[in-house]
Image 1 (cartoon, one colour):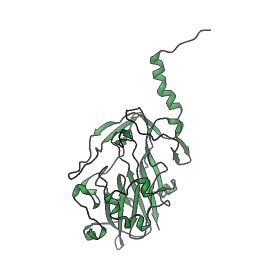
Image 2 (tube, one colour):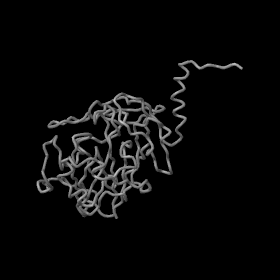
Image 3 (cartoon, one colour):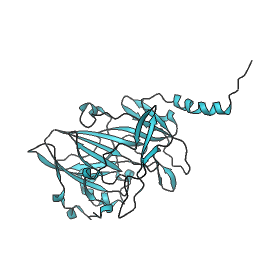
Image 4 (cartoon, helix red, strand yellow):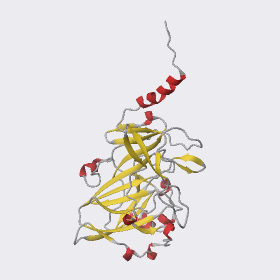
Length: 312
């Protein structure tokens, strides 16, 4: 019997192919780091901010922006509730001038609704498909925002939330003594008409990273499940995979996306906000108003979440 031996080069070429054959779900897979397009989207004038890069991962000629395509322009910024970079640091809600918050008109002759938003890290808020405001700080330091909009019920809320990454395409940051630490996300919001974030909202992930072993990824209907995937932090770079899904063009307004999986609720301790003034100074408008922190089923690995909720 003749035995054909594979060269070392052949084995190395086969290794990624074998890894990809372990995955049979719907995501498109990128391997390794992204090509950085913007080194740093934001620098804090009055404090320390982590680098907030924008990168591109290319899969079969198709480009995916990481951590997300964003509408980060000054004209779109939501008003600061708390932002040390702009020296807006009220000690309580009583110190906030809510009359200075501009009102975005969705409908004429409608109720003016005030919203309080804390996102880990970045958000874009849409009402009935119209952009109402974006987070002025993409990564850190942690901040919070306040918005006003005029709309008639029923109306649709859509929020894009990004858990930013320092290591572009790798879903990680330098933190807790490790160079490659997968950070976590989180969103909490309340609105003056009684709307609050909770598990009645719908949430879907569109960018998941880092994945060290593709066999840990499962899907069940429209659920994208990574609960068995490793969330370890590393000192040294290890090649990882990223999972990408195409974002529907009409995700902000099409009601078929109200069939996405239910958002998962998390506690203040799980998100880690007890020492964050941007949150604690206005706690009565967040958990104090009955709202919960929400995310997808994986708080650590899912980095780009689209939320939908219908206010009736």
